[in-house]
Each structure stands twice: as C-alpha cells, then as structure tokens.
Image (tube, rainbow, N blue to C red; front, top):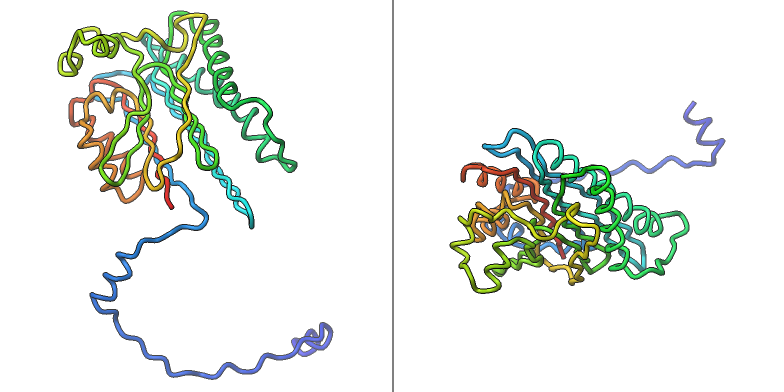
Length: 300
C-alpha cells in the first residue's frame, strides 16, 4: 500500500537517518544562572493582563464592575496592540450601585467596540475620522444618560483606558484611579480624584492624613449618573515601556500603601498573581470596601 501511494504521488523514500551517539550532561549552576538572567526582548512587543476582585470583609454585595478586551495584530510591517480596560465603582446602595456600574460599563464597552474595535479589526479595516478623545467623551455621555434614565438614585465612578499602538487614552470621572508603575520605583497617579476631600487637599484646607479619616471622604462631586451635564477628564499618554498600568477602586488604593502596591506588583510573576496578592493585602487591612483591580504589564 505504501509503495503504491509513493508511486502515485511521485514521492521518494527518505534516506535512513544515521544514528548519532549523543551524550548529555546537566548544566552547571553558572550556565543556568546566565540563561535565567538574560533580558528577553519580545517581538512583537506585547502586554499581559491580570484582574482581581473581592466583595471585601464588611460589605454584603459587590458594586464594582470590571471589563477587559485586548487584541493584537502583527504583520510584516505593522504591529497593532489594542485594549479596552474599564473600572467602575457603583454607589447608591444595594441594586442602585451595582446596576449603575454594570450598565455604565456595558454601554461604554459597547460604544467603543462599535466605534473603535470593529473598524480596526474588520476584514476591510476602516480609518477612524472622528478624534479619539471625542469618541471617548461621547461614550461617557451616553453611559451617563443611560444611568440617569434607568437607575435613578444610582451612580458610579468610571475609569476607561484605551490602548492603541504605543499610546493610552484615559477617560475618567470619580475616585477610582489609574497608575503607571515603572521598574525604577516610580508610581504615577494619572487620574484626578473627583472627591470632596481631594478638593479640600488641593485648596490647602486639610492634609492627606486628615483626608484618610475624613467623614466625607467618599463624597464625589463628579460621577456617572449625578448630573445631566458631564465632562470627563481625558488625557493621552505614551505607554510605559517597560512598565505597568493599574486601574483600581478606592477599596484597594485607599487601604494599601503605594510602597506595598509597588512591591507586590514587582514581585508578582504574572499580573494575574499580582492582582490576587493585591486583593489579599487589601482584605488583610480590614477589607471595608469592595476591591477591584486590573493590571496591564507592557513588555518590550
């Protein structure tokens, strides 16, 4: 049978592979260490993502919502990293808070997928004529109107990071936060808290230490669902290469020091494990609030 198939397709039998006497020996400790310490440069440059969430130790339900969408197209001439990362922390009590955060996240994600993801990744990619920051602002306004109409009495923070190529466009309201973390020890908060205590700090009326225990520390003056007119903060940054971007609720940053945040992120073998550890530490600090975190590692 095999000879017939070979003749039918004109195939030739391969020459027998000579047997070579190969000997192996364990690598020395020096050889293993040399390989382990090599800096691996990834081509194409890419990012890894982790998420973590907990109801906390003192809450009965979770009012936070997370969303992650990431993709990559790499060809002979172009590499296009793409990501949508959303952090929403609901407020207004049971049902109001969790429904508001979920609704705002879904409206925001749906809008950005239709306007940005599908045009870039369709069989015939379309160029986007509308300015990116304008698209992000329009998406926020749509989410705001949906919460006002469908969840009266509810509201939510909303922090959205859109990654395309070498840039991050960040759109934000509330007191959830986005950070850039660099291997040299820098932790940069790239959002502004729209809270009463932050405004009092900016006016020089209270200190950071006083703000941490202020009775109105959770009061926001700007959030989704609070007013018909909403102007989110919009900024564009180069991605930290190498480095991390973290989006998190105040259930994390309000109870874990920046030093501990940095140490856990840098010690984590993967962003997913680092997120798990961050949530554990926030809970060990009492876990008085819901805890949510997204960690994106940008690699060379």
